[in-house]
Amino acid sequence: MKYRKLGNTGIEISALGFGCMRFPLKEDSTIDKEKVRELIKYAVENGINYIDTALTYHNGTNEKVLGEVLKEEGLRDKIYLGTKLPVWKAENEEHLEQIFEDQLASLQTDYLDLCFLHNMDYGNWETAKRLNVLDLFDRKIKEGKIRHIGFSCHGDFNNFKEICDAYNWEFCLLQFNYMDYDYQAGIAGVEYAAEKGLGLMIMEPLKGGQLAKQPPESVQKIWDRANKERSAARWGLAYLYNKAEVSCVLSGMNDMDMLKENIETAEMYDIGCLSEEELALYPEVKAEYEKLIKIPCTRCQYCIPCPMDVDIPANFEYYNMGHMYNSIESSRNFYNRPYFLTRKSTRCIGCGVCIEKCPQHLNIPEYLKMISDDWAK
Image (cartoon, rainbow, N blue to C red; front, side):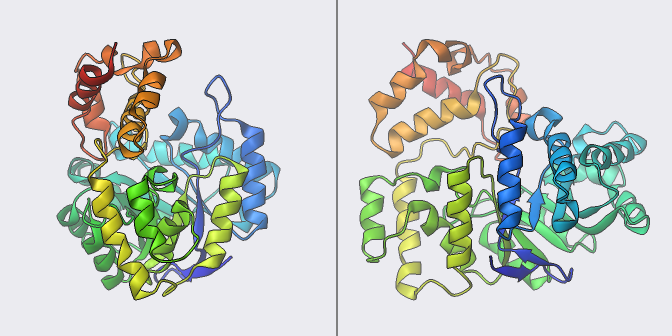
């Protein structure tokens, strides 16, 4: 495993970080703890030293399961542990502090190596200021309960820059990949973080897995011009490892094959690994994909649960995959299968709850109506 400096923290962090948002699940949709145990042990044994979670993952159960696994396997002191404070869940300053303390208890730890202010955009940043979250961070740092402090951001570049300049942050977490070059904070955010000396961590490196699938023929023809046999996932990850600004790439790895491939990829690529000719292919691939993608969803799953039990990410994935991979009939058949009946787009009543939760700020009800009009029997 290769390691990189996390800004000025003094931490040498693994180039690949283990993101816990997509832990494997049982048939009843609860986390499969034994599979998680297997994945986490293998990751640590093979050099991954950063594990990333959040209170909101898996309806609040993610931190607890991770804490149990780390304690039972004696792994806590072998890794850097990070989680995220969701200010939107707090009723007041006292409640926010209690949320933080409860997170430590769930993770069965006395301190966080990395603590993030979670999911910043314009609205959540205003909430954070109203709740004096920066004062809370100052206290917890003095108490030794936070070693290093940062934030994750889904806002645009101006929002990102304002937050960067508001506090003595040590690192940040941005959504970035070759498709999101100018989306949210984008490349401008990547460069500004480096200018500020912040460690830069990357989420959604493969755009919710969309960039890991076998590309459509028109995209594959572009990659083939490089005369390199790389999987779609490796093209996507190599793009990030090539950048000196990037400290750590987070991946939500929910099976052993994915974990092993990503570890191999992290060991294979480093800063400057791509030639000028290879780098020139990415804008072409981006333009080709943009002709095909209908709904820019990353499957972060913040939009669920839906009050009507619509499986929003699945609806979007079926629709996108059908158009991106020229498999509309097959995807539409999945959408119309009986088992999906209670979760399909036709159940949407347009309440808008999902819009408030979406970090991409998508007009989800409009997209669901588009799918229903196009595909519903």
